[in-house]
Length: 96
Image (cartoon, rainbow, N blue to C red; front, side, top):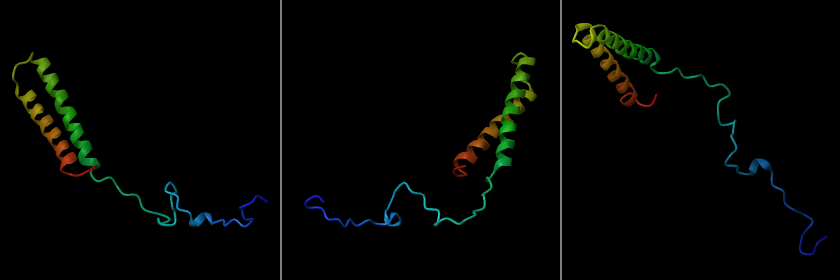
């Protein structure tokens, strides 16, 4: 035996040790239900309207060679309104 060291070394249980990287499973319920996404249908519809409005606007401008026409104007308004709706959902609706 080395001088100054005792033969009895106190060993603490692993359970009593605090480990900041340990994930404690006993604090969570065994089965937690999944939460549904909040607005998937409205977001998908707004994306379809935005892309569709931009596509129709570009096609109408190509066909009429840049002349002002009601189809291009209406599809542009629909596209801009859909983009505004997406921005409102993103920033005013909270984190999604």
